[in-house]
Length: 162
Image 1 (cartoon, rainbow, N blue to C red):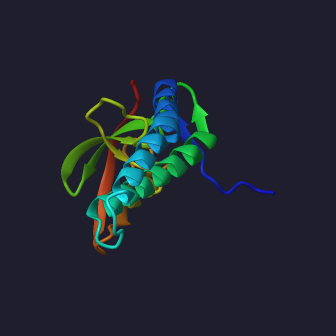
Image 2: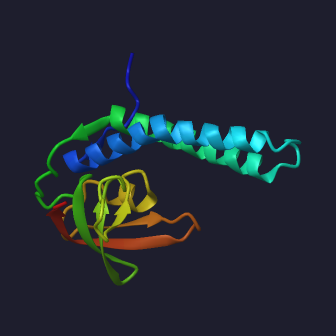
C-alpha cells in the first residue's frame, strides 16, 4: 500500500501547539458544542431555531478542524528547520521579487509560523509549487488563479528560525 499523503515539516513547537489544539477540540471542544446543541434543542422547533443551526454549524467546523489536525500530525516530519543551502524547500524563508516587488515569506505550512508575522505559501500553492527547488538567482513564472502569468525571482533563501 502506498502513501500518497505529502509529509509536512513542523517544528517541535508547532507540533506541540497543534497537538494541544487537537486534544482541546477532541475533548473540551466537543463537550462544549454538544452542550450548546442540547440547550438550543430544548428551545423547541428545530426548523426555526437559529441557535441550534449555529451550534450545528460550529460543530461541523470543529469536526473539520479535528480531521485536518489529525491528518497533519499523522503525516508530520518533526524537527529543526532544514538548514538553508540556497535552495527553496519547505521550511525555508524565501526573499523573492514578485511582479517587480519584494516579498519575504515562509515556504511550507501555515501551521509552522506561530507568532511570527511571516506570510506563508504552501508547497501546494501556485507560487509555492513554482519555486520549489529553485536556487538563489533563479527565475520562473507561474499561472495565478486569475489566469495571469506572474514572474518571480529568488533573491535569498534562509533557514526558518521560529
